[in-house]
Amino acid sequence: MRKKICLSALVLTIVLLAPSVVAQDIYPITIWSDKQQYSPGERGTLYVAFHNERDVAVTIKNITIDYRYWRAHTSDGWVGNETRIVDEPLAAKKTHVFDDIEFTVPADGRAVSTTVQVTIYTDQWPFETTDSGYINVPTTPAYMEQIVTLFTLLVVLVIVCTIIIAATVFLSARRPKVMWREAERAE
Image 1 (cartoon, rainbow, N blue to C red):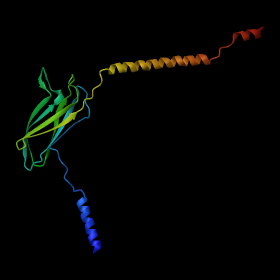
Image 2: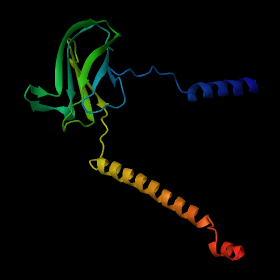
Image 3: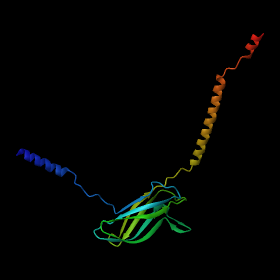
Image 4: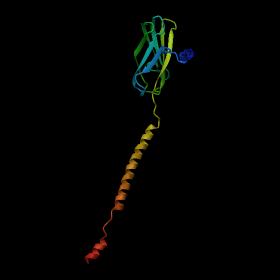
């Protein structure tokens, strides 16, 4: 009887202390790009997955993409954001991936890493869902050309010094013939 009580208590303790399996959280919007880093002027593709976690079907009305630090007014007008009219139905508990969002990293002073905010508007409550991603544009220091010049100069000086040291060693290790001893022997 005592073994049954101990066994029952042990099983109950294991069941209560064991972590319960919880469904993985699915974020409504997932954002990623085709590369980890971009150079100024380079083209890339932004992928946006929208998961309809509602129990009813929705219609995706439009999607707004805002490249936060790339916004500016140029001769073509405002750049750095775009809105696409989609009007696409999406069933309940399904995911739609937008894989045709292309962007170009600015080639001017705005070519810095930026946050990308994506807002998707639907016809059901909540009417808008927002999330953000990140596009990495590494910057090189302004003095990088000077560093390259200094390294080139350093390599040239090392080569010249190596030649001078080799010539010095060669000339000091060579023993010249003594001419006056040969002249004494001849007499």
